[in-house]
Image 1 (spheres, rainbow, N blue to C red):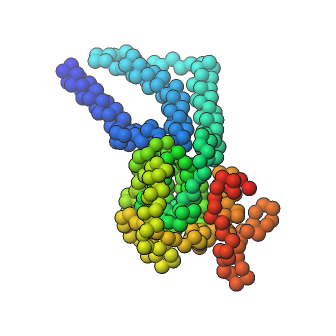
Image 2 (image 1 turned 90 degrees about the horizontal axis):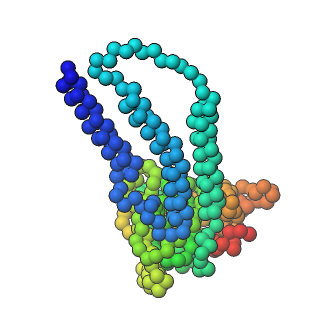
Image 3 (image 1 turned 30 degrees about the horizontal axis):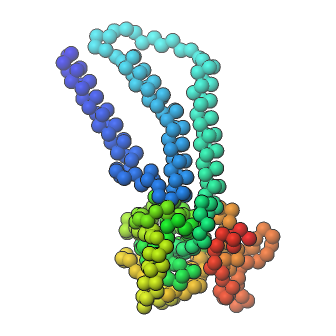
Length: 338
């Protein structure tokens, strides 16, 4: 019996170690690189700091609880031949109750404070640069990503180039199922939704190729919604723009209709584009007024509905058609805060 008990104890120890290894692998996502802890820009650095703060605050609870659990299991474990009766002596301690309820409440308050502070700080473009921001319009499709550069007149599919040390404003929507735009080394996630124009700032501090992905289930081939963000020096980026403009492909209504079909494809480059296309995508999916992160999209392109001041910003005409003539795709920081 004693040998059998020892064998069972050894098996339990092995199982505990195996479960610990499996749990660690699950917590790391089985990704040895841990991209969220390898930030390459000021926005991602703020988010990485928030993650570390969250880990440390949670560790204040998790480590003592796990330690106490292990101590209690070991200290009061059943032993072979133990015949002592089970007679627990129940008691109440107001001090202990205050400690194990008070500490989690304080930690939750701290987590909320740091999360709100970081969230509001990231509404504005990075402040450590004087470079003029660049706007990139992002549309998630089945099962691909469309990137439009309204100021440059070019568009790409499933890849994009950005200059280093320059704030990039992504204006995002969806013409398919809702998705989630994520470049772990540059920024956090932001949802793309039909009829909405969501905004997110990023900036790359150095040249490199950063992995981006659709982080939301969106159908049969959602796992193929991946793209590369290529950060380049200013001269390299300008050369890429010049080369892209040489492409004979034009992103017009016919090209977009083919692009929006449910299929997968590789990278594509369009040397010219319809400047009204992004606004039309938002409008056809409802396009109601939606302030995001304290920023008003009024004046960027016509949208259905009215503001709280009662002004009509539908942009519609008497015959129900939308007037795109006043669309302004210049989404600089100055215009965003009018």
